[in-house]
Amino acid sequence: MPELPEVETIRRTLIDKIQNKFIEEIICYHPDVLVNPDDISLKNWLIKDIRRRGKYLLFDLEKANPDTLNINSDNILKNDTDFSDNNYSTNYSDRTAENSCVMMVHLRMTGKLLLEESIVEPAKHTHVRFVLSNGGSLDFNDTRRFGRVTLFSPGDEYNDHGFATLGPEPLGDDFTADYLINTCKRYGKSTIKGVLLNQQAIAGIGNIYADESLFRAGIIPNRKAGEISQSKIKLLRQKIREVIAEAIGHRGTSFRDYVDGLGNKGFFQLQLAVYQKDGKPCASCGTTIEKIKVAGRSTHFCPHCQK
Image 1 (cartoon, one colour):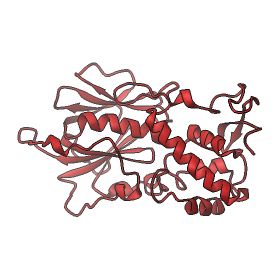
Image 2 (cartoon, helix red, strand yellow):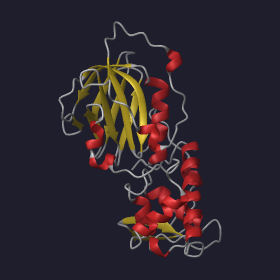
Image 3 (tube, rainbow, N blue to C red):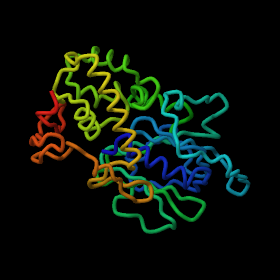
Image 4 (tube, rainbow, N blue to C red):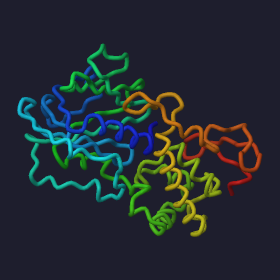
């Protein structure tokens, strides 16, 4: 599943190419993938912004007539992102379902968003296509068809329980040492890996970055969160932020499915210390990396370096 670094990389590649571009039509090839509870129009939308929250992508769309558009390229955002939670609160007082909407994309296990420079025959697992006015398209492709594209009236995305209950961003100002200490107390009987995977506790961390962060912090993944010292929790917060920032810098981790919006793979798999390294020697101490199940997920760790 694409985690925070992969989704952020996709956001950056797309915003560079299609912010202030015009969607002529949204074509759905599999109705279960496109959710449209308010029966929002599928034609004539301007892409004003692309945001990310946890593992979700949010497209802010504005109704527009392509014949009268006057786009100022100076307004295009740069690639850097304010990761604080305040970056995701929007004033919707002047926006209505008639003139704007929010399109939420959740990639889940195998979802991809891929830009095509020209209109080509949809690939086998393309379920939704956004026809762009520049002659190309943005295709939502998903082999396992677990992902979803949902259209909301402005502000209604917070009616989505999974989205509305997301915890703080790992790189945000709200993700403080005190927050993580209190969260570990709150979920004290859970394993520490289970806490990291809990999207209501921290948004965007999945299996890869939980394993890597715990390795760098020297904490065994099946340890109860309530048993970890405050000094270790502070170190873990530091390592989580370190790992996430590095992974974004390496454009995510690619094994099988993940590519960015231009079809390019990430490189953070070359930096992994324990994830999917079971049976291999730990680069730090030489002990064999082990794999167990924790919180229902395959989990990789070094039994010597992590306690």
